[in-house]
Length: 152
Image (cartoon, rainbow, N blue to C red; front, side, top):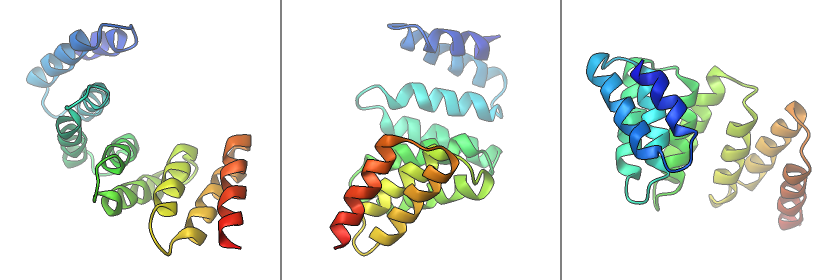
């Protein structure tokens, strides 16, 4: 009940603090609810200054369910925003893709992270192209074109 209420509240503008409280209540009752950890992490990740808590929630979800794609992908997103943590973010996106190879968002995010890593531009392009094979997207196509232009 708390988990579902948290999900409902998280989609209503201004109700994120209540959603967080509901996820926390759900986890007090059922601490091994991996999806509640992920959704709590998602809610925390959008609040300034709470990214470390979000990361801890994603990591808790992965201790419970090591192959949880959403936890790997969202942990990658959180880590990619922290200076010096890009290699960890890349590893998380790769873990998500091992479990769900057609996850477009993970291919795009991995491509972005690789593009920011010296010497890994060809890999970045390959990830964007993988995303395009799954779901054509003009913005992703433009990103590939810009990266290719950088290789010349």
